[in-house]
Amino acid sequence: MHYPRTPRAFSLIELLVAIAIIALLIAILLPALGAARDAARTMACLSNVRSVAQAQAGYSDTHRGWYPHWSAWHHFGGDGTGGDQEGLGWTELLSDQIETTEVYRCPSRPEAEGRFSYFIAANYTFTRFRAQFTSVRDSFIAFPSAFVMGGDCNFPGLYIRPYGAQDPQTLQPDCDMDDATQPVVFFGSAEVNGVQYEELVPHNGRSNIFFFDGHAAGFDQYEPSKMTWHASKMRPWTQPE
Image 1 (cartoon, rainbow, N blue to C red):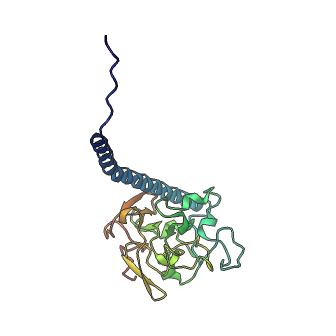
Image 2 (tube, helix red, strand yellow):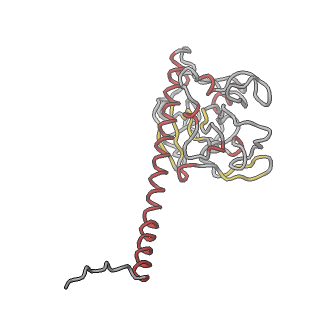
Image 3 (tube, helix red, strand yellow):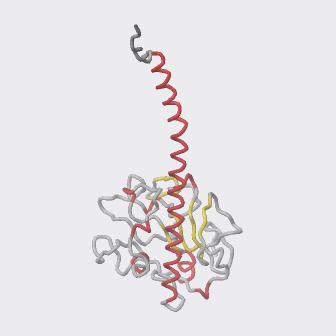
């Protein structure tokens, strides 16, 4: 007489070995998955800054070659009270070109940091005119492929705590970030109100930058032959006119 064979159960040792193998595979795969997510966020950010570049160009087409101006601290949709300066921020000026403020937030930054992550060029116009509500015009730019129009803003003084230096209880995020009076890219660290902050660089230290001619690219350091803040000279942000 033949009896049905009872299926052999896993021994405790075999079960532990299987668990150890699964844990090892997870440990191997997690960094790769994390790197893939980071790469996807970086590409999404690059797409955002390209959209901002296109929107600025569209704005210029309807304003006789003038690009959106920079000014002070603005709350998107604000009414000039509660810390919101009079007038419109550059992101508000682009409302006809960009339908959602999600385009202005780098996906590699925490949502709690704020809805706005990008700056626009203001150093040149501030140096030249010493006034707010100023902007560049296409006739100013001698190096369109090198003149930095904006990109990832890495200055902690423009973000709320705990990721930046501003008090979220008293100040809303700025929708008009610019480089008029502070370094915003490739400066390592910065002092805000007497406190030293490390530069807030996403993408594993790589910043996405867009240029006057509309192209955008990622950089992990300042490259003097490829970028300038000055409209007619190749100048780093640390070098005055």
